[in-house]
Length: 336
Image (cartoon, rainbow, N blue to C red):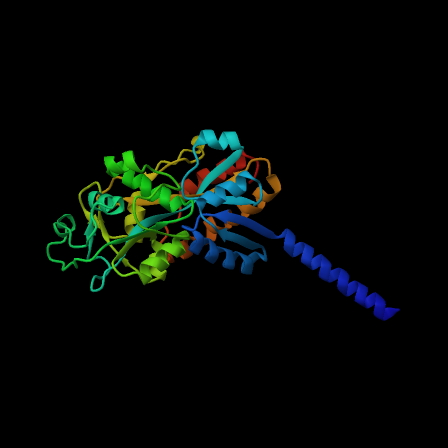
């Protein structure tokens, strides 16, 4: 009898522990752009609190879709959702971290920071009008760099992507032909190239395919040891992607809580600002107070404890005044 009772108690404790663990999991899905920093934060948060973050890096389009369908605790998107759509879908939105989209190439003999590009040359490459690396329009930007007469392979995203939304918004603002022929969005009809799923897929293609060019969030370029280019910003300076140039772009940002922080950081002013910068955003279902509180606790912990991790991965943490605006927004909506 004692043995049966002991087994019953062990089973009861095990089931209770499993239930607690399940209850203490936060489920999120969306943008691949911030996955490296969310993953690092999640590891540290679980060690500290025991609460697990299960984040599916499926692209911004999937993240918006899943939170709209209420199948996750939070969605994540690099493309900010307009206030009117948030109201229609009964969603809340706040920024989590700021980063940069960079151009990466695989040209034998060319190292990171050697190749200079401007918005016009990037536009013509992705439109399929500049087809070889020794095109005069690229050579004029790089007179001292030996460029091969080899065909350019364009690599782009195949999934609905906030990284794509940031990149195509940059092209649309810089190039009238791109705006007219292709436009901006999480998914567009690409004139040329091959598609990779997620930032991971684009990074893998560029690493494997010689004479290719693609766009990824900077952390993926670093992790995969990809060759990044310099870019000419609106101030006329060729800048390299770095924490400092992303921070320079973020310095001009004026996020408005009344508009659910809706803001693009494309072509931000400043002589050292990286021109393809952007915040990544968290989306919550307004009515799901319990899961929202769990999610907000995680991001509040990250705001207090995660800045050094973000910097190490070359993301710009939100400035303290913006963090406080986000906390006030949470409080206003009853989740802080």
